[in-house]
Image 1 (cartoon, helix red, strand yellow):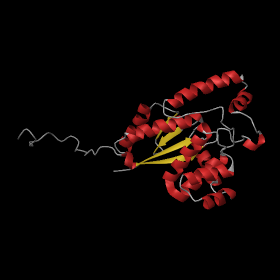
Image 2: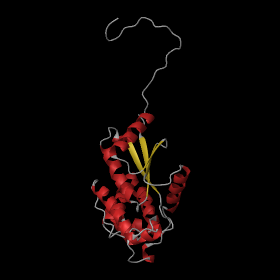
Image 3: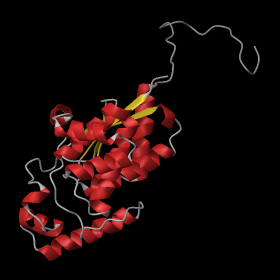
Image 4: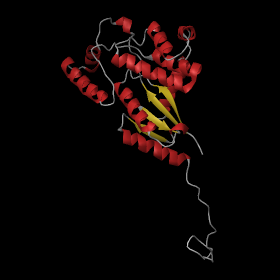
Length: 243
């Protein structure tokens, strides 16, 4: 029986990525073969040229998006209210008034550092904590001290993480993920890829993620079919109902 590998491209600063993460987790929780599913988090920067938070102290997420998209602030706030309601439906408490616009490159590096120190489970834990820090608690996810704190909360060694972030550890992995995304034609996130054979875009409903898992599992583990000799006529045989 073959295991299933699901790769998830996402950005820490993507509100739909966090919602999609929760919905996918709900589908995986009820999936019959969940213990045979490996999940790997991949990096994707929606705004790779975003300035660090220190470049715009006091700037709110609504003001940043208003300036970048050319939309009235009130319209942006209405969009945030709608997303907040959807997030609440999956148990998330978004607070856009406290969200600090940040560059997410180092946060993505941290995910790869976590994977190197503690495997896929540690990376997934760090992704969860980073997204919660950004959208629910107003923490600054491009601040080195905050990133170390989040890593420690996930059970990682503070000094090992601090040393890694002070170097370029994880940078190559982030860029490799983004290059793979481009090669696969991924232009938006979240994006889910099962065994590099089946893809799904967006924060889909739970039942759609269930369909992804079930179809990918069938593709990875097709039923055994015994070929028969072409043209052979039927012959006498016995079955459950007798001979």
